[in-house]
Amino acid sequence: MRPSLIRVTGFLLLCLPLLANAAQLPDFKKIVSESSDAVVKIIVEQSATSAAQDQQLPPEIPEYLRRFFEYRGAPPSQRQRMGMGSGFIISRDGYIVTNNHVVQGADSVLVRMIDRREFDAQVIGTDPRSDLALLKIEANKLPTLKLAPEDEVEVGEWVLAIGSPFGLDYSVTAGIVSAKGRSLPTENNENYVPFIQTDVAINPGNSGGPLFNLDGEVVGVNSQIYTRGGGSIGLSFAIPVNVVRNVVEQLKQDGRVTRGWLGVTIQDVDKNLADSFGLDRPRGALVAQVAPGSPADDAGLESGDVIITFDGSEILTSGDLPHVVGLIAPDTSVDAEVIRNKKRRVIEVTVGGLDADDSFTLSAKSGNDDRGGRLGLVVGAVSAEQLENSGLAGGVLVREVIPGSVAAEAGILAGDIITLIDTSPIKSLDAYEQAVQSLQPGSSVPLRLIRRGSPLFIGLKLED
Image (cartoon, rainbow, N blue to C red):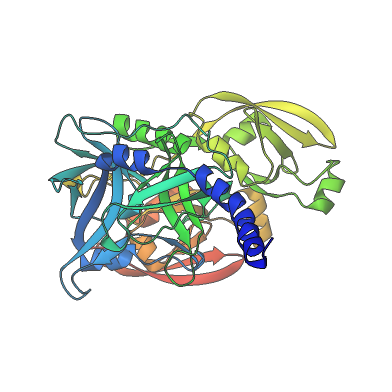
């Protein structure tokens, strides 16, 4: 055989496996043609002041974890700013799913479809803890997308995204599921979403868009990216469909979301702790503290317990527990399997309800009702153990800071212990309420708190 023929034959033999693999790659054309009509572009308008406030992430959020919502148009000095995101239609009568951070603080929301039709949208409700929002437009017989059966996506599975990155409408990108159950903190260091990690190219403007499986079903809502430079580097995160379904149903019915609450402070179990607790390997959620009067306290859970299953779900790390508890309806009784004194025991727990997030509607923009009070704080009692460890005679614990409130602007954080407001010592919840009610509108007062064991004064400026 001639040398040239040998080289050609060898080249073909090398290419055959590549050609065979190419033939096995998925064809996304059908998904795109059948699904694009139900994907929408979200255009929001908000004041420059509120836009700047909304985009300021607290220092505890790593720089490389960013939500992707593209701002375009007027510079910050002008009164209005335009922002763009994505979403998708889930019902023929006009219900649309997107991200909370896309519509947060919006003065108006416009939905644009692939055929260039535009509709003014009403914000039915938002859920900051899951970063989801439900919109409604006045239209009928709309194309819709189908939500996949709960939690059926697998690592290594092909997935596809449709959205408007950098304003480039209806762009399609594809990749695989890289991991499941990723824990990422919210602004308040909460962790209720077991994110799907993918290598799908996602960029600003994809926020709120759908993530599809090869059956054309929505398996997630694109929400965050991991990046140091602002663009995609192959690490994106989507809210899984079981969370989407749970939140959307509550927003549609009530306009707000209530989720399960246990009332424990937890941490991971390392090798040394696993050995000391008699575990065969590091796993479970170690209960570091039980809130007095909480569902965990009522059920008899104790500090030092290691929760290894909850409601039948295995708890491998501490981050798994909030994912499971948050999806359980309040007042539901479930079994928690724990390790206590190196022995297994099953404890029945009646799950409580975590305070529902504020709903937001354009027609009632002041509709924060009275949650958080005048300062925008959700507070609770400080446990005896916390008081003893901090050397305090009293105080109130900040459980949540309402975004955009007086407290948020002052820099108060969840976990702070308030001990003084103006000249009033704060030793109890009653003392806190009395001190807040006595504050004069428009006044500036000092507030003393304990943060991570250290005292700190913060100035509060009340609204007129």
